[in-house]
Length: 310
Image 1 (spheres, rainbow, N blue to C red):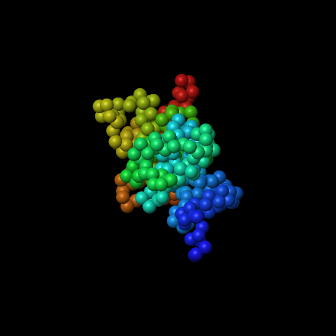
Image 2 (image 1 turned 180 degrees about the vertical axis):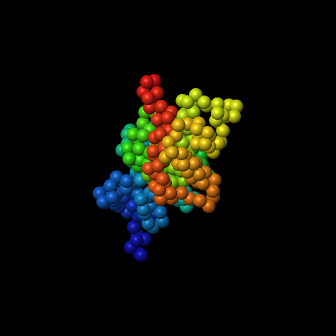
Image 3 (image 1 turned 90 degrees about the vertical axis):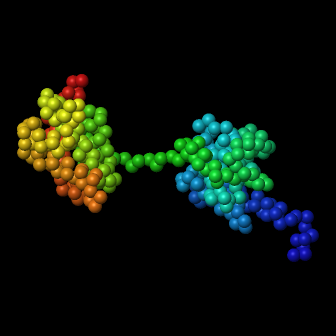
C-alpha cells in the first residue's frame, strides 16, 4: 500500500490506464470469436465491464447503427444521440458512454474528419436536452426515451424478415386463384401464410371472407346481384349461402354446397366464440373439399377468363 501512495497516480487514473490498455485487446478477441455483432465499444461499470447490450433487442453493432443513421441523413450530433438511445441499458443506472468511445465510432465510420476534438458535436448534443454529461461520459435521460423512440425507432427497429410462404403448395394452391382479381389474390396469399405459420383462427376467418367475396362475384357474373342485397348493402353471409343453395341462386354442384356452410361456421367460431380455438386438424379435415369449392366459385364467376380478356 505504501508503494502505491508514492506513485503519482490516483486510483481513477490507474483504472483509466488499465481500461484503455485492455479495451482493444478484448474487443479484438470478442470480434474474432463472435463476429461483427460484438464489435460494439466496451462499456465499463464499476469494477467490471461488458459489451453494450442493445436497448432495441437486436444484433446490430454500434457501427451498424452509426451507418444506418448516417445513410438516413442524420447529423453527427443526432447520430451520437441515436447510439446512446440504441445502446441504453437502464439509463438511470448507467454511467453512459465515454466521448472517447463515441469519437472513435464517428471517425472510423467517416462521420467526423478527426478521431478527437469533436467538442462542437457534444456541445450540440448537450443543448438538445436529451442527454446528461457526467465528467467524460454521456448518457440519455430516461424521461426522454419516448421522445427519442419517435425519432429513431423507424430506422433502428428493423422488422424481422418474414419466412417465405409456399404459395404453390399452400392451403389454397396458387394455381387455383392466380390470375383472378388483386383483392382476391391478397386474401388467398394471407390464408396460405396463416396456415403455414400456425395462425389457424386467422386462416379460418380469412377463408370465410374469401368465400363471401367469391359468392358476391358469382352473383355479379350471373346478373342477379340484387337478390343478395338490401338497398346498397349486401345481406348477411348466411342469407347469401342459403339463397345460393336452397333457391338455386347459383349453379353449385352437390359437392360444393355443404362446404359453403362449413366455411362460414368455422369462420364464425374463430371470430366470435371465446372458448373455441381452430386447430390444424380442423382445417386439414375439410382441406380438399374447401379447395374444390373455392375453385368452383372462381369458375362460376368466370374470374380467370374475364381477367385475361381485360
